[in-house]
Amino acid sequence: MPETPLAAGGASGYDGAEVTLPRPEGSRVKRPIAARRAAGIYLAAIALVAVCLRILDLVKPSLWFDEGGSLSASSGSSLKAVVVDLAYTTHGDHFQPLYFILLHAWRSVFGSAVLSLRMPSVLLGLATLVLLTLVAARVFGWVHGVLTAALVATSAFFVMHAQEARPYSLLLLLTALLVYLFVRVREQRATRPFPPAAWALWACFGVAFFGSVLVALFVAGLAVGDLVIDRHLRPWLRTWLPCAAAALPSLAFFVLFSAAANPSHANVTQLNGSLARNAVFSLYGMVAGTTYGPPIERLHGAGTAGVVLSYWPSLLMLGLAMAGAIVGALLTLRSDTVSRDERSMALILVVAFVVSYILMAAFAAVAHMNWQPRHSFFLAVPTLLLLPLAARTRTGRGRSPWPVIGRVSLGLLLLANVYSLSHYYWDQAYARDDYRGVAQYISAHHAPGTRSVLLYGVLELLEYYGDDTTVEGDDLPQDHLAEAVRARTDDSPVVYLVSNREWAFWRQPESIEQAMAPGYWLLDTVSYPYFEIYRFGRR
Image 1: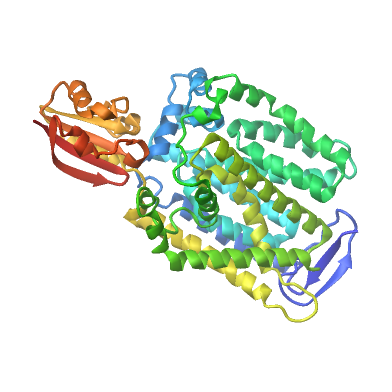
Image 2: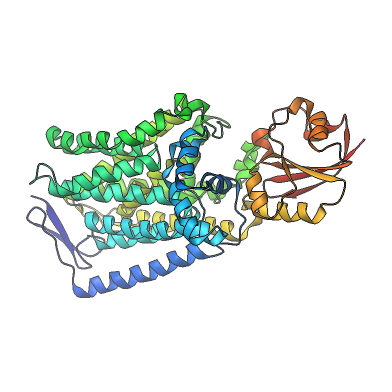
């Protein structure tokens, strides 16, 4: 029989003296009206903060490189054309097609302005906040739910993905929904062989798997956790085997077309640096956002280690806060503060995190993919559901400092995300690709006898911002660049070479200036975030 901790401050055991009373299976303890009202006030304030953070400067930044991919993938003449293009593309978006199909439908109604392109992610991000709060409250109590809501609302990882026209806000919502439905299944399957919630779980996984093949890694971890912790084979098989069947339609889409013949041949950013570094970066970026430490643009090329070490005070603080919160949460699980139901669900989430993280590392190694925090989106859901355990008061003999350390650690993590968001909103060093600024520059300097070539990037984004003169150049041979540029620009006397993310595509030992030296001399260069614009004169 599960036990319910009661405290002066409420039923969740976060403060005050506690006693433990038995309660019937599945029963709930009603919080006092005043406590529920206080929780409602806190949640309303948190929701207001979440909305403000997700709409702040929403249209100010230019659409960036990956958003250009979303623009291209959702720009078909019809829904059928979009699906066919996604089916046969070799781009990595072949393995996460749902968002682009939905974005195409959204654009057909609301248009393609920047606000329209990013608004679905804002709405999906707010829905994720609500759902994770409900999951946390259902499993661990409303105090825990309020803390989870505060972490999600201010999470730089969640906010950034809620402000971009990319699939990850949708995928975070679907992952949260999978956890919620699994919680419901565990509540129901003790009395029903096929719980009603299981049907919704299977359908949700079928949809989520079409949203991203990576969702399967998390569901595999959740299934392993369910088996390891609950140890009931027959209910386990009835829960998870139908999930495999629900994935078959999406699996057919993935494997019957070009990109899946060999995942390593999919057009994704290839591994840059060691896999171990990416594994650490994926956790760091998920917990505090990728704008917490050094700007990502400075982490390419020589001297990366020195750049990282120059940020050691803030990175050390983040590491200590993470360690304190993790140890505090684990100690809480060993205490008598948590009920049996809470402990078992928390341990399932711990196992799901560990297993899916290992599977993601294996996937990145096989595909030789540049593993970024966004690729591990599913890890954020169990993390923010579990971390508030560190703030819970624990009982037992003696006086332990860990409850205080856990609360301080959670506070530092929240401050780290606020600090990360300040970089994201207001520090130009952390800005993403400025296609708007580049298009305006090219348009302002276009004159008779000048031509511009995009060596690497998303030409559709330059066109989106009004530059219809730049031509594609990513197919030009790098070892004979000057000759190829002369042919592509009809021997124009002045040529602008626009280089987006030069570190990602330029593979020659010499610089672009040196490669162009046989036919051109460099007049000047202009820099924009993630861009270099070279102006060459013909010799």
